[in-house]
Amino acid sequence: MPIPLSAPDIGEAEIEAVSRVLRTPRLSLGPELPAFESALAAYHGVAHAVAVSSGTAGLHLALITLGISEGDEVIVPSFAFIAVANAVLQVRATPVFAEIDALTLNLDPAAVERVITPRTRALIVVHTFGVPAEMEALKELARRHNLLIVEDACEAIGAEFGTGADKRRVGSFGDLAVLGFYPNKQITTGEGGAVLAGDPVHAARLRSLRNQGRTETGDWLDHAEPGFNYRLSELACALGRVQLGRIEEILALRRAAAELYDALLGAAGVPGLEAPSRNLPGRTISWFVYVVRLPESADRDRVRAMLAESGVASGRYFAPIHQQPAWRSHGSAAAARLPVTEAIARHTLALPFFNRITAGEQEHVVGALTECLRRG
Image (cartoon, rainbow, N blue to C red; front, side, top):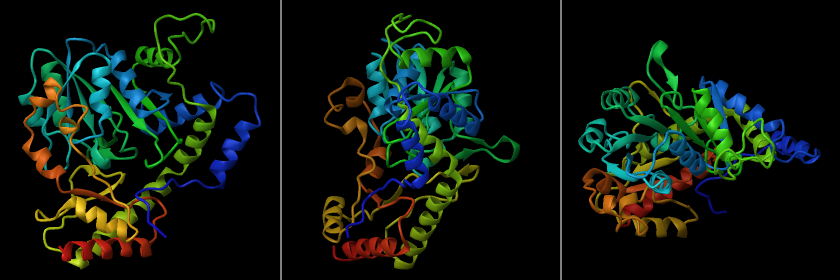
């Protein structure tokens, strides 16, 4: 049977939680929404969480709430999911692409500083593949240049940055932070996301914007400002609450799968094949995907085709945003000079990775990958 790239982990408790909602008259804006939001806020140690229809919607609302608009620049990585740039464009600001650190694959603080201009208003800091970004340096940079920080923690729920008493979960460092719950994420609501906020004014505006600009105490047909339908259903919130209640089990399963891949790849001993970086001081990884770097001589597209013939799915994580057909003619993308991003992106390959992947499946994946690389 083919091994998928990802698979959601849904059990009887999740099915029962969703079924309970279906037996009620409240399928939207019912009690599951604030219950899920409260659980998310408590888990991250922040005052507020605002559930929305996707991580992309969360990024959009975060930028609006922070007042980012036409004429502003927002620094983003190009080695990321395309939503980080799209959201900036949606508020008519300009994304400016900065280089990444070759080890963590996150924004390089020194590279960020090089692209700051008088128009720069904010950074979108992505915790790529569940690896925490260098928040201490980025926060200091933002303080010196009077910049806002939006954390994109869509791939990183449960990851931690810092040591000792200063260790905190990602999502608690920025002015606002965004989570994503697509089915390939650590926890899922089917489609969905959330914005984490410390400021009650920000939280109130986010709740209004996601619900067509309504005020929380106003009449259903009264709208304080133009907004969006970015609500998250009661069904999704019920599913998310159960998943969040299992998060330590889920993170442990994914950590164990990553450790087994490390061991299998180490034993395979393929020259030039690199496992993900693990020994990163001051960081606890939340394993979203397992991305290897192929040898320089490998043809990634051919490797992917050969893996597919062996029943193994794989993914190009990530194709740089500034080189995407949707972006490469855009002014800021065309001006980007990102040799590290481009060199790394050519050789990254995501292997099948999900909560319930078996040891046998992982052995098959590594065996198939090893055979592909040895054949050419």
